[in-house]
Every structure is written in C-alpha cells, then in structure tokens.
Image 1 (cartoon, rainbow, N blue to C red):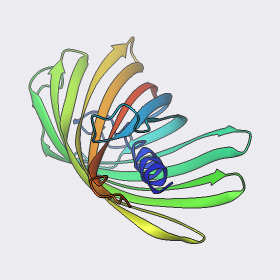
Image 2: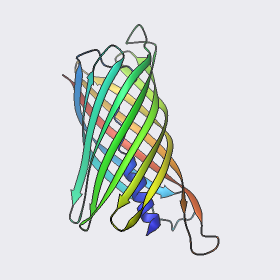
Image 3: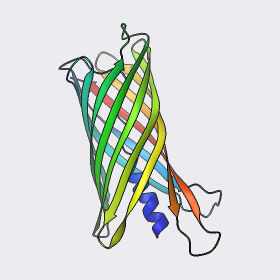
Length: 225
C-alpha cells in the first residue's frame, strides 16, 4: 500500500509542464491553451511484478508577459471517473536570463519557479499534494518554431487523513518542441522525466527498494491573444 501511495504522489507532481518557451512574452501579450497529459510512474527496480501506475489529466493554461524579461503563468488540471477524481492548480514565474536579439534565431535562457497544489479523492477519501519546482529553460529558436529543454529540481509533500506525510525530492529534465501554426496558434508536445530518491520500506530482508521514476508526455495547443 505504501508503494502505491508513493507512486501516486509522484504522479501528482508530474503535471508541472506547460511553462512555455524560454523566451518570455512581450509586456501585455498573453496566451491561453489546453492540453492533455499522460504519465507513468514506477519503482526503480528491474522486477516486472512491481506496480506501474498510469495516470492522465486534462489541463488549461494562461500566460502573460509583465515586462521585457518577466512572465507569469497559471495552470489548472484534473480528471474524474466514478470513485476517483483529481483537481490541481499551479502558478509559476519566469525570468529571462539571456534574450536573443533576434526572436527567430539564437538561444534564449530563462529561470522558472513553479508552485502547485493537487487534491485527489479516491473512494471519498481526500489526499493533498503540495509541490514546488525550479527549472532552467534553454530555448533554441528555429524560425517560427523552437526547441526548449532544461533540468529541474523540486520538492513535494503528500498528506491525508490518518496517514503520515510522504516527502519527495524530485530531479529531472524536460524537452519540448513549440510548433507555430499560422499567426496565433502553437502546438507543443513535451516530455518530462522525474526521479525521486524515495525509500520503499520492506518488512522482508532484501525487499528494500530506493527510487521511483515518473515519465509524462504532454500535448498542448495555445493561442496568442
């Protein structure tokens, strides 16, 4: 049971993609979009009998440029089936560290900080996940399109009634391709991989396992307003 809870907590940290390009939006410019996330979490073990927990979410995003080098964004996501539903929200702030003189060429670099909260209800029992992450975004401008990648580190807390909190350190990286469609639309597939050096306690000697992985694929469609 503890193993499944840890995997579920790690899955709840995964929907923190969709932070956009490394190049911040111009002041006053904004985008709105939606997308779908599909993720799988698993223990760091070669044992084929270990559980692999799939999950998915539908999300909505909004981003706005505040200054030449500062951008804010927000995202909400969720999914619901009988006896199980989840709803989350994440906010982030992006600061440009390097801005290419030509938006169609060159390299942009930005730092982004994300904070999120998710409520998960399974069989009427609510669980709560709070998380924070920091990432460096490196963007390679390819004309109207861009490839954005970067490392990420974070921390999450999973809690619920009658259970001890689960604390997770998170490390990983993401890679996204922003494909501009026409003047205002953009399609962005993104791959996010997270690792947590969490301990799975075991009652039998030799059953201890350390570490778990979460892999998420997101596909988002945004429109420039």
